Image 1 (tube, rainbow, N blue to C red):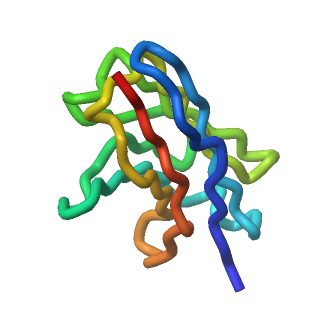
Image 2: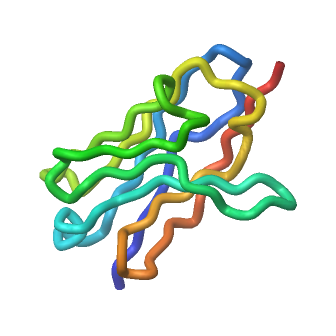
Length: 114
């Protein structure tokens, strides 16, 4: 079955950078809009960033605009989230999603200490 697998999370200090990866198990997911979401304990899952299937359009939550960059490599069936200037409020489990499929990854933990 189709799967999304996130990786790249970890424990870092404020101001550090991380790059998250989301690998899809099937090439057909290269034709879906892809998004990154995050969820902190006791909070609802929130939108972080999205990219169109062609890679021509990107969207960001105001809280991460200017610090995070979403990109995709269709040949590798992989979506990336480059996170710079990390803040403690970025601490959450980060998930990737393929639009209109109901498919989510298992999540990767990002913890930012001050």
